[in-house]
Image 1 (spheres, rainbow, N blue to C red):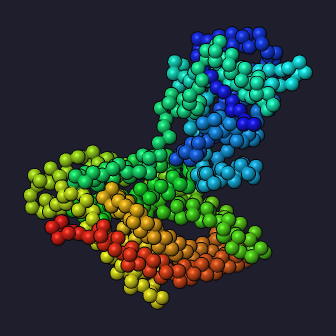
Image 2: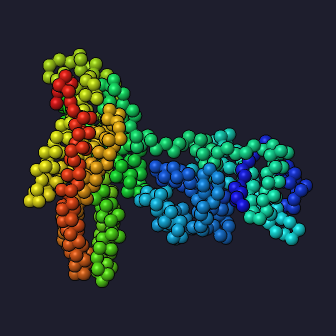
Length: 542
């Protein structure tokens, strides 16, 4: 038999709640079991991962501070049906999947959240009356909940409507259907057409729109280079701004990561799309965004060590694993120091000047017109600003592609590690530009080609990460000894860890050639050549 979902009805403020129960008492035996006031925290990640998977995540706690038991309950519901997936007692609002002590639910959350933290997206006060329908033998036939809601920090006249929730009990479907019939036909209460969370988000003006953080505005073929670049830079700056609060508060490591990626992409545009900004202005912004990349690096590096730490432990023999814990404490201590330095940098006059000047530039929609009124060297400095973006971008992407072929083709087993690092940087710039201007390069072949490029980048990225880790781990060991934080066993454990990382580095170096050859296969190369070839009549200034 198909299971029944709970039914939810809208109850406006003008409806007398007692009248609802009076009607039902004519036909059923009703008993009130609870009359309470609750505080509900709706939870999701910054990028709304639970919502995107059609789940509603919440944590309820009684709002009565005098209550003896104030332990909260953590819920996961299906957004569309309201069906409960998870109900667990938790003393506090969970932040990460690791805070859930139930293995199956923790695994479920881990698959959805990854390393992202749950954040409170709305706080709701719930006044709830709960009644049960009993038969003559005092068996529960159905459950009724009448709820009224108040959104914290929202005007009294701008609140969600109340709800009557009718919950079925297994084995008594006829009672459930009869209650729903009475509520629908006699009380004429309308069914709720949307999840309560959606109504709360509407009232608060919040929308789970992740596109504004992940996708670029479509670039039209008629756009000038400045028009296209301005749109891209505005988007990337908005990503920086959206992530700044989270990185300051250290909510999770992805805020700093996404902030740094936005900075890196801005730097890529400034460096790769030539002759759009006046030289003096370009030099200033390239220098300042480079500084921003530098001041965020130490905290990000320490984030990565802490994220990888469990893997480091597993790489060691059992008898050495416990001796690595002093290294974890060292990393945590220095992370606090570096994060404080980062926050001071973001509070500095230098940063405020950078963001202020950047906003002024992005607000200027008339740079091509200003260039046309310029003369001499200044006009030459911005000569590509008014050129078609699709042509300027294609020329630059084509040039980067040829650089990748040259750099990758010259790498041999005897090449220095730095040569692979330079190729990695070229690949990253190349991929960024294709992603920026992807509207000009469509088709499944190009997408498949980018997948191959991603695999090559992963190989080069992992290799470079290991190069850095091996060098820094040796430095950390010396620093820990100087600070009196490492005994002989800890240094030995770190030495073994470096050996394991070196083994992995050697394997990745051997894998590089296969990945590169896959990337430059003739049929894949032909797709790039066809898509990116620059015609003679499309010449622009490099």
